[in-house]
Figure 1 (spheres, one colour):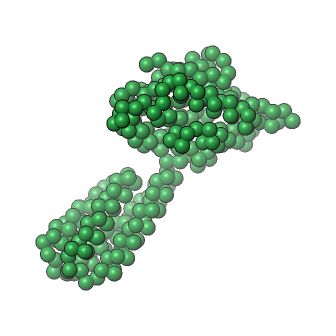
Figure 2: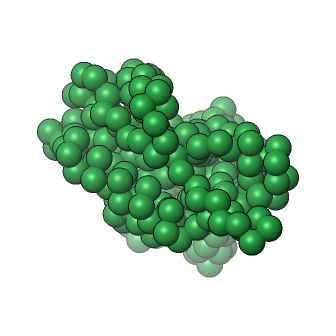
Length: 266
C-alpha cells in the first residue's frame, strides 16, 4: 500500500513540474515568476513527505494558485495543457484519497485500523476541545474469542469479528467510530456523550449482537458477547491516557461477569 502511494507521489511530482514547465516558456510577469518559485517549493515538499493528507493539501494549494494565475495573467499560451495537467492532478488526488482510506481500514472487518483510529482520534479530540464537548472512548474485548478459534476454527473467529463490526455499525449513531484495536479488541469513539448515554449505547450494542448474531455449531446456537470499559475523555487528555483508563475498566468488567460494561474512573 505504501509503495502505491509512493508511485502516485512521483506522478504528482511530475505533473506539478510539468505545469511549471509549460508556464516557464512564457515571458512571465512578476506574479508569474513568484508562482514558479512557489511551484518548486511545493515540489520539494511533495518529495519530502510521506503523509497523504499533506500531499493532498499541497496539491490543493498548487491547483488554487494555478487557476488564479491563469485567469489573472494573460501570459499563458498553453492554457489547454495546463487545464489537462490540473485535471490529472485532481484525478490523482482522488486516487490518493482512496488509497489513504485503504491504509486506514482493517481489510477483513471494514473497521478502521490503528492508524485510522489515531487520525480520527486527533480530529475528534480537537473538535471536542474546541466545542467544550465530551468524547466517549470504549475499549471492547470479545468474550471467549480464543476458544472460538481453537474449538471451531479460524473461519468462525473471522466471522465473529466481521459480524461484530457489522452489528456495531448498524447499532451505533452515524457520528460514532468503530476501530479494530488488535486481535479481538475494538475501540469505539462516541462523540458528545455523557457516561450514562455511553453505557446505554454499549448496552444496546450488546443486546443487538446477541439477537442478530450467534455461532451455529452442530445445531447449537452460541451467543457472542463482549466486555467493555467506558471512559470519558477529559479536556486535553491524550489518546493513550484515556484508552489506558478504559482498559482498566475493561479489566474490572472481566472480573464482574460476562457481557459487562464498566465505567472508567476519572
